Length: 436
Length: 93
Image (cartoon, rainbow over all chains, first blue to last red; front, top):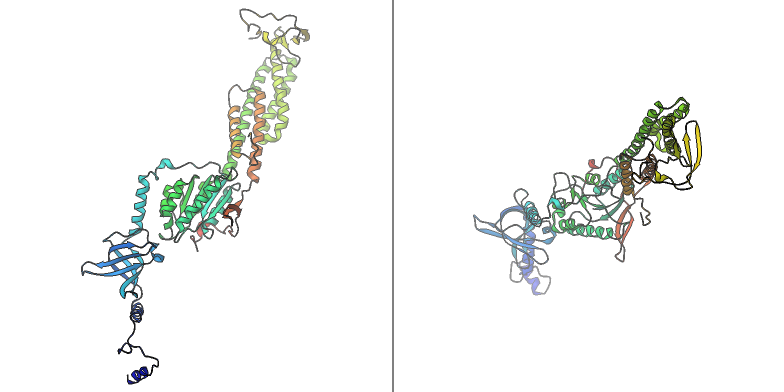
């Protein structure tokens, strides 16, 4: 001690150990020393108590006291914004919580306090409270009503995706969309899907895609997939934050939302037009499978074939019925017509497209053949059938005009004829019909 | 289809096709009309099939340019993963 004192008299380096007036330390030295000792001695601890005097500073730090009611003691707590942003909701006054934090000293005021890293309550406490609070608010506004859900287009051409470009969800979504619907255009808008500010990024990304969608018919999005893979309640939390949830509800483009695993339900999913259990499932709900589209085309093709085949069968029956009553001389024409019908009927189911070109001429010929065959029956009974020069039957008075050239088919041959006058029957204009 | 469109209207083609099938199924349709409808239907069917098998949609990323304008650029650096998507860990790194 003597040495120290003498040395200080000569203005040499002081030894400030706080053991004498000359060696007095400063207040800040004291506080710093106390802070260091406290932090070294304790480290992080879990402390249980009741929350009181919860306040929030303008920059987002939270201050409160943790109180032990039984023993009437309390400790000041500070929860800095860098940690506190994770908090889904502010705890209510008097709420029993578990705080993880480090005992320390606020050096400027020499105040003992807990620097809090996390707050938990029994079960999912604060998460549940925050979730329910917003859910009730949304329900009251009708945001969760089933009537708000919009139908998705059956055949989308362009799909927007909002997710992180670093996450596995994007890979999964693209893989499924490409496999099921290779024609679909995919427009991705990256955003962070966890961490501070993620909810705002989700909101902005949805807004950007909506803006893009209105930029023209070649940009119009049929649906937006909002997604991320699984994670902790905290990781998925941005999908329960009001900014993101309201953006989903406000989206002019229908939104399919898939966050986390099937058991995780977020508010974004509840307000979305459609919810899917996983990112891949969201992609599956968004587009039809190309195989089912092919199948519906095949069905339409079969419908076409069925329609025409039925007509041909009906024609075939008509020919058959007529043929029964034909004189032997008409046998050849009958056989030819029947053969054509049968050939076509046989071809149709298998290769309709290939057969079509030939069918058209054949069927046109067939139609004429059917028309031509029919009057023969009448002619055979001794009546005449009038036709125009193209072979169309003239059966009504309206079919005739003066000086018109036409043909009369009679038993044993045809007569070329010309109309002199057209005399309409005054009582029955349709009386010209000659056969029953 | 009054306005020229570079995009094939697949849905319209399907609707037309369904309309044609329905008309073909109607009673009392004439053979000539049936053939014309059939021909039209086959043509639409062929177009739809060709489009379906060849159409390939782009995969793009919406990026704000330096001027703040949104542009769609080909998505880069995102490879289709191997294996079943559900088997792999999810979430962000």
